[in-house]
Length: 174
Image (cartoon, rainbow, N blue to C red):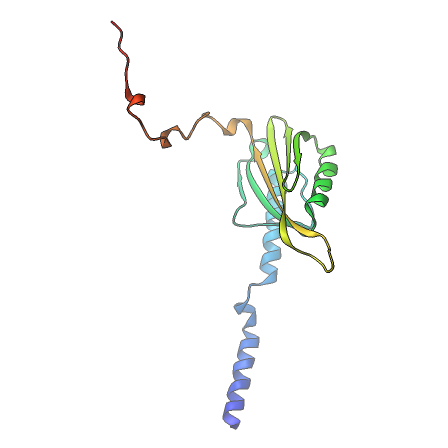
């Protein structure tokens, strides 16, 4: 019996000491957030981002540098879509981005332009709630930025279209 208690105690001690390696390290997550914000701030310094929003690693893609940036940034925010709408409406005023279109419904879509670039901000309810008794719901924010020279060919997907017999007809003149 004493051996079993010793064995259980040893097992629990081993698990507690190695617990840091068994579970994802919170420091790694915060380091990723900090590093990602530095990179995004460098590449897209003129687009305001909510301070409390977290950058989602997998769906975020950034291409280019400076004014030639194109890509998508995906964020989760602990506040409601309405609060994020107010944030972007206020925060973009002094940055040179001009609102050219907006749709405010269950999905909020804001389209901005600056120096020939276009930024589309989509804000949707992410589900769940950050607090008790009707507190604000979380949001997912997708920011897509494109530079005008990013699209070289108007229909780059034409090669995906299956060829038909009518497409291969050649009309010959007399």
